[in-house]
Length: 439
Image (tube, rainbow, N blue to C red; front, top):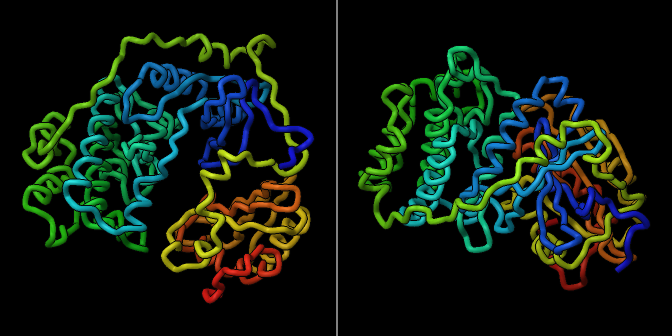
């Protein structure tokens, strides 16, 4: 396997592909070159942090999160900075998203859903007891580790632009609309703990029903349904599950069930196992202060790659499912937010072909090295669809191309990819034994 002339490094970390993206941050896979440990690195732009007056809040959030060492919350290991960026080094969780199980297998049995919900409530309760609120609990933030245990990501980091006002309430509506509490939408201020619980209730409903309790293509109708808690439980749910969901999805935050009451609920308590973990280990907060200082001694060097990133065996194995071309075009993969294909074409040719195919579909194209960002000039159901692509070198004459939704509606991304794929037929590598009937 060939290697690029310059690997991208952040201090002691060798950086690979992008695995997540948000308004204020990008998350990349990385490996500690000293220990070999796989990590995820969340990258924040310093200028954006200062422009939005977020420095003190980020410092406070990260300091708190470094003290949180719960088995159902993604860990923060350390914080680094270069002259232009802040790097938050996180635990790398390999089991994928919990909701991929819903997409692939449909609704869960109550015993299975209850286990995940119990782990979610354990994580939420622990963080709330330390004054940390998620404010954006949604499917993308619920991960599974290799043993199948729930890991909540972005706890305390997902709403970095939030501000608590003099009344002690948060005032910025954020989050994915379908999972957001009514009091967040009405803009009169809300309590982070009760708002998080509402989102947990929506998640429990989806686990048990296989679909959202509140959904409407018209945003005004969606807000009306949420504000009046207009939903109906499916008939296959047990009475205990229905009762708990109804108590959580109470539109009045004053009467909504609390975590303490959930822990005493009969449906919830079945086979309940409280989290067992050791909190004695001290957390070093020196690096949190250091990242906001401009002195050279606290800065890490950041080197950029000059050709496609060469993938190592670990990354290739972790993504091997995506190398099967049968996964690219099947209808059941339509809910995926990313997909991949392999190609024996040169990297420059792949980039050129994607650009040629995207522009007639109404996309503006921005290129940087072997990465591209495509943005639909016409706004869709959830704003402008943005697509990120990157070319990785698997072997001297073999590349893997990742096509990922960065922003917008997942269904629109799926339709875009179907249109794009018909234009890329000559660059996609096909084995002789592959069934191409889906084309």
